[in-house]
Image 1 (cartoon, rainbow, N blue to C red):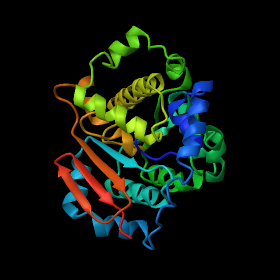
Image 2 (image 1 turned 30 degrees about the vertical axis):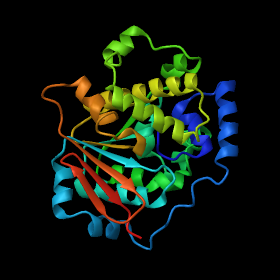
Image 3 (image 1 turned 120 degrees about the vertical axis):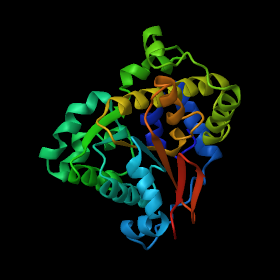
Image 4 (image 1 turned 180 degrees about the horizontal axis):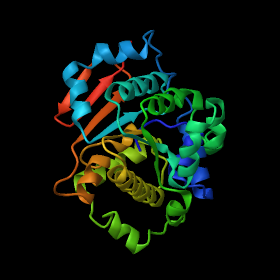
Length: 288
């Protein structure tokens, strides 16, 4: 999970609340005491950020996709403004969120009938450790404005529970999500290294292996949610889940190897320009 996470969000996104994980977090706090510098907040509106960095061709590529995956840094304010503007421009039929567990779908369905100042509480957002809900409010508002169905895409805690103690997932679930299909060795090693780096080199091997299993489960689970969502769909997710050769795009290929959806990744990064890595991946580097 290479995207930067606030310490509280680590509990939510990984769900490893064992004493071992608490110890690792303590070690991380010492080794990474400097933390990530506060994100640059460009003096641009979300409209300017999108229109000045994404061409009409880029936006058309997003509109033509069956699934758009927007990879973010969770606590970067400008990323969420860009996400909201992209939603308004391409008008997907559904918007899925990594930050909302599948057992919260009913609460998500009811947001349209609740005042926006109640959304944080309705989703138990702050209690689950995600960054300030104010960062995400524009994204939820944009999705509702275009009439998109909101999708809870993250596996519920009970699904991830077997991994907390170093166990494995039930065979039927692994079979359904194609999790017994191994990652290519090069990609597995790269993902393991990313996990170690993200935790400042202090994640022991057993925990790293468990976190790799959790990462793959989440990628496959969110992929399944996208395949069953009204199309075209859009996913809001941490940037560490969008790698085309080992993240959600790869998991989608495993679940639907032939005749699968057209997928477009937009990876948000705090820098200067748009990199078009290949036909399916664009990196929007937020313009300062």
